[in-house]
Structures are given as C-alpha cells and as structure tokens.
Image (cartoon, rainbow, N blue to C red; front, side, top):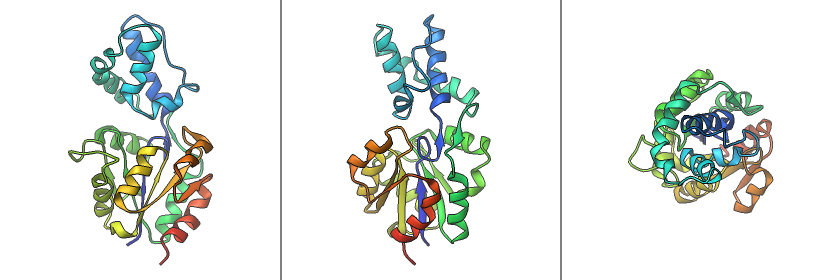
Length: 220
C-alpha cells in the first residue's frame, strides 16, 4: 500500500499565528509587551516553543533560560486557543482527498506533542482524512529519527518501502533520508523557495500538484 506521510505545522497547516500568540501570552504573564510578530517571526514559530521563547526573552534582555521555565505554560496557553487562526494551506484538503481516492494511505508525523496535534487536527475537522498520527511524544524518539515516520506508515497500514514524506524543514529532509524514502519539501512553508538548498527529491509549490507528484514518486 502506497503511503504519503505529512508533517503538520508549516506543511499541512499554517499554525504560526496561534503559536506566536501562545508565546506572547507567556511574555505578558511576566509583565512584558508582546515580543513576537505573527508575520515577521513566523519562521521561528515552526522551530518550536522553546525557540520562540528564547527569541522573545533575548529581545527583552532577559535570560534565555526562562524558555525552559515557560515551556509548559506556553503549551497550556496554546491548548486553550489552538485553532483560532490556524488553517490548512490552500489546496491541502482537496489534495489529500485526491490521494485517498487514488488509493494512497495518508498519515501525519509531527514533532508537535501528540495531544496537541490531535486536538488541532480534530478542531479543523481533518482527523478522518488520515489513517495514523504520530506526535513528538508518541515514541521515545522524534524526527529526524526515522522511527516515528515508520510508525506512521505502519499505523496507516502501509509499507515503509512504498512511502514518501511531505515536509517543510531540514528535520523532514533528514528524516526521509534516514528512512531511505523520498522527501517532498513545500515552498510555501516558513523558508519559502530557500528550502531548495536541502535538495529534496521534489519541491511542492502548490498542493494541486501533489497527487501527480505522488504518482510519479510512487508508481503503481
């Protein structure tokens, strides 16, 4: 069974505004003004909660070690309003539907904590479109270790030798390489066209192109 595995943040769903809102809530709780901008700092949001907190506290002239102390509060703030601004990227939903209609299995493999990932996907009404979801804490390891990717494929009922990974970062590229599968990196994510520097097997400019691309990378 052919399987297409998707990263979540920055690949399937633009979550940057809600992630940054959670970080700014932490800064306000310490008596600071908002330190991050939803547009300008979107790339940092996709590197995780601690990265956002370190950037914000660095700007405020405070110890970056506060990022560790505020990581759990950040997750709590995020969970309270996880899908206010987050939306699937244009064309993502029809592309996944087309893949499934063509007989592909689909799964999510993310470095977002599983509980948050499931809550987000469910809030957006997307859960039924995926056969499996593996989060950062589902296994003892996370991407770029290939084990989460392989678990996502297995959970979807697929074969890791007949799978590809759609992502947006070097982590996804390294995961695919470690798993011995092709990677497809989106150019509408946080790095834009600069992601081409990672030399994936393919780049994806528009989700409308994904079904044909998947057929080419995973021929019957």
